[in-house]
Length: 177
Image (cartoon, rainbow, N blue to C red; front, side, top):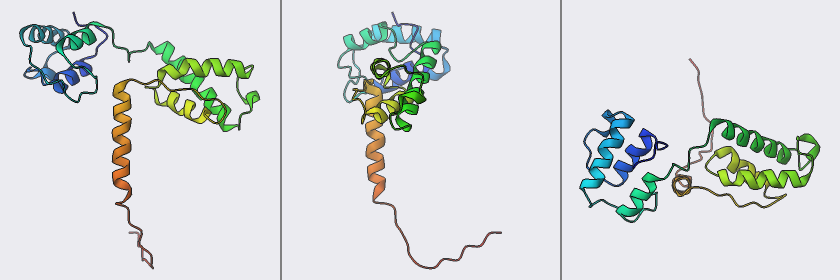
C-alpha cells in the first residue's frame, strides 16, 4: 500500500504531522515502519488534518498520497544534470547575458533548459538560476507545497529578526589575547 519511494524520515514526519498514534516510530527500520503504519491506518480513522504542509484534508487523501510515489525523489543522474544546467544559467546571468560564456548555442536553447529546470523548484540551485534569469527571460518556478511553506516560514522569521538588530556608535576598545 505505501510506496517504497517514501523515506523513513518522510514517514516519521507524516506520523508526527497527523498525530498518528505510533510509539517509538524512530526505532523501527523502514520496512517495519511501513507495516506498522499501514496497520494503524487501517485500524484508526481519527487524525489531525488541520494546517499540514501536505494539504491533505482527509484519510482518503492521506492514503492516496502514501500510495503514490514520492514526487520529491529524483534519480541522482537526472539531478546532477539539472544542477549542471542551473549552474550554466547562473554563469550566463553573471556574465550580463553573454551567451558566449556558456555552452548554450542560442537563446532558444537557454529558454528550453530554463523551462525544463523550472519544474525542479525544490532544488535551491534551480530556484537561484531562475530568479537570476528574470531580467532576461521570465519563467515561473514550480515548487512543492512543503518547500513553499518552508520558504515562507524562513521569510517570516527573517522579517521578525530585522528590527532586533541594534547599531551602536562611538569608540570601542578591542583587545585580543
